[in-house]
Image 1 (cartoon, rainbow, N blue to C red):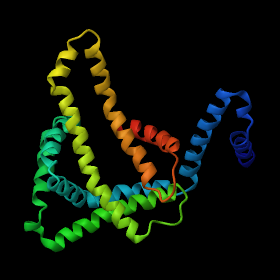
Image 2: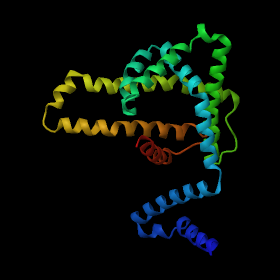
Image 3: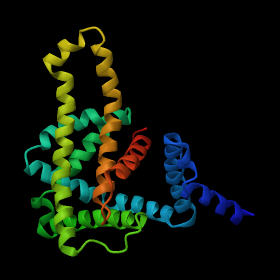
Length: 244
C-alpha cells in the first residue's frame, strides 16, 4: 500500500500533469519537487549523519578556523573594523554577548606566530583547510557528486575562501555600522516615512546577508555547476531558517 502510494505521488510530481494548469501548476510542481526531494533524502539517505559530522567538526576546529581567518583579516588591515562592528553584531546573543566577544578576541589575540610557532601555524592552517574540505565532501554528497576537487584546486580555492571571507564580512559589518552613524542618513531618518523604511531594512538586512552567504556556498562548494536559481532557493530557505 505504501509502495503504491509512493509510486502515485512520484508520478504526480515528476510528470507534466500539474504543468498543464499553466503558471500556477508549474509553480506547484516545482515546489512539490523540492519538498519531495528534500524529504526523500532526509528519510532514505545519510543527511542527518553528515549534519552531525559537520557539527562535531565545527566544534573541534572553530578555534583554528577563527584564528586563521582573523589573523588574515589582521594582516590585511581590516581586523579593527571587524572587531568594532562584530561587538555590535553579537549583541543579539543576549546579556552574555560582551563576555563572549571579549573571550573570542582574547583567544584570537593569542593565535600568533610568537606563541604557537611555525608548526602550530601550519597545524592551524591544515585544520582550517580540512574543515572546508569536510564541508565540500558533505555538499558533494547532497548534490550526488562522486568526484572531489583535485588537490591543487583545494589548496587554491580554500585559501581564497579563507582570505576573502573575513574581508567581505568585515566590509559588510563596517557598511552596516556606517549606515547607522552617517550624518546624511541621520537627516534622512528625520523625513516622514524614511525612518520606518530604515527600520524595515535593518530588520531584513541580517536575513539577506545570511541568505547571500548560503547562496554563495551552495554555488561554490559542490564540485559541479549549480544553477543560480537553485542555489538562491536553497540560500533563501536555509538563510531565513538559520537567521530566525
